[in-house]
Amino acid sequence: METIKWAVNHMPKTEDANLPVMALSEVTKARTFHESFPQYSVTPLVKLEHMAQKLGVGSLYIKDESYRFGLNAFKVLGGSFAMARYIAQQTRKDVSELPYQVLTSKALKEEFGQATFFTATDGNHGRGVAWAANKLGQKAVVLMPKGSTQTRLNNILKEGADATIEECNYDECVRMAADMAAHTEHGIIVQDTAWDGYEEIPAWIMQGYGTMAMEADDQLHEDGCKSPTHVFIQAGVGSLAGAVQGYFANRYPKNPPKVVVVEAEAAACLYKGAAAGDGAIRIVDGDMPTIMAGLACGEPNTISWDILKNHVDTFVAAPDWVAAKGMRMLAAPIKGDTPVTSGESGAAPFGTLACIMCMEEYRELREHLGLDETSRVLLFSTEGDTDPARYESIVWDGKER
Image (cartoon, rainbow, N blue to C red):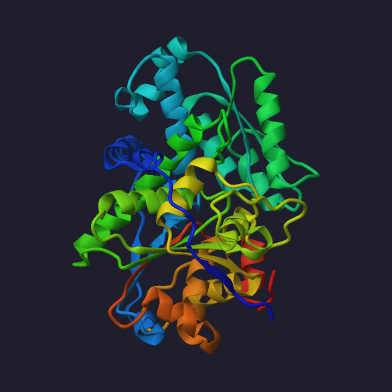
């Protein structure tokens, strides 16, 4: 059986110039924007008291994003806010002037005109962009990488977007989408990975993800938890991880939680960078066979990478069986705890935590992280059963994919 790999962060620190992207004031703008949607509600923060006892930690919280806007995943938070920021920029307004009812008004449509938003996705981000474009009366074009499922494609098509599955990996789809946007009148690429010359929109997407982190933080306080001691967060290109790490570094600058970033082993570009230790970006290319479709990304977001290498404690590369274990444990937790329907990418951090706490071969990592009966652990289940057939195959039939 493949083992979990990890690299403690010893990379040289930078000036931390990108941490202000996730300033609390910026995240507050994003949350206020999301709250203006009629579909908005705070997603549940599930406290697994009995599971915490079983694993040997003090408290255990799972933010359940399967309830987000009826889309079964968190991704819409980023795409919708970035689109709003872009429209605000083009109409010379502050995003605070563009709540949902204004963005969807006939007057703004006449002022802004018609745009086409391009993106590449395994499914969740594209569905979010397509949903937001539909609500705002704009067009969306979505390119999906090789191996994407028909179910996820159909979910995007239902939102009115043009969507296709391509014969190439995620990173190549990103380049294709960027090229198509560049050659389309009023074409804009909305992607949560950043590169030199394309950093503004990815930063806005990260701020949109901050809504989820801020909600969770507030919910912890409501439960009497003053702050998490540990946060486990999954990563593909690293935008979500950078957003969550950035939020908590800004929120608790004097006593930040230890953050553990979990990637799919087949696409562990951040882990490879941390293992090398020099702070330079590492790229994984070619096919990336993994059940964690949302994490099958081989080129890091440059903004996030800067935040992560300055603040993350440990980077983990997790085999598929770890995500599958997490899915099953959350679906059937200890009696008395609330089950969580968590998809492949959503459950990877919890599966990692369970292995660290219960398997002797990860004692060294457990001790390094200081995980014990006093720990207050926060995790994010970023998706529900976005591919129901695969979810049932893994959770009900005991298969690995």
